[in-house]
Length: 158
Image 1: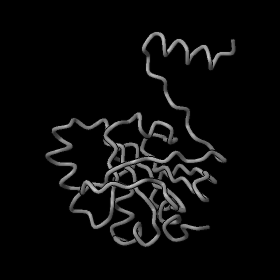
Image 2 (image 1 turned 90 degrees about the horizontal axis):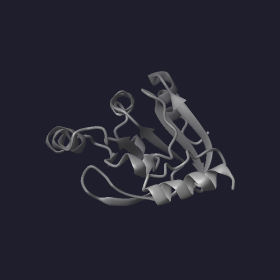
Image 3 (image 1 turned 135 degrees about the vertical axis):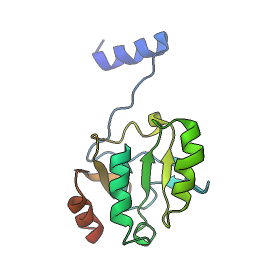
Image 4 (image 1 turned 180 degrees about the vertical axis):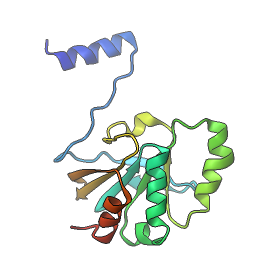
């Protein structure tokens, strides 16, 4: 028996969670049913040319700074912005994070369950940008600075 099947069977019989493998170039990006910060549902990635993902607060802050001067950019380019907020205590999320997100002029998809987006590659403090072509992953970028993100915002369909 090869190892992946063995791990899957062990996880099933022992009740251990099975961690989804990260997606890579050439993979189909799985459809996600998510709600934005206003509770409006959407199926992602849809026909988006790319997807922006922040796995932690520093990455999320970087995206917010880049979008300050471009409040319509996400909507104009049909680009979803997902923010993993699963590490945040639920009381902080309800009392502070979601109200702050609701004040933003663009759509944010807060993800409270890390398992739902565990397949998206990430690195601490970096913004993940997934370039898509009809739902197929064409490129995965890890952006550690504003300049890299600004370059993406300047040419989203390159």
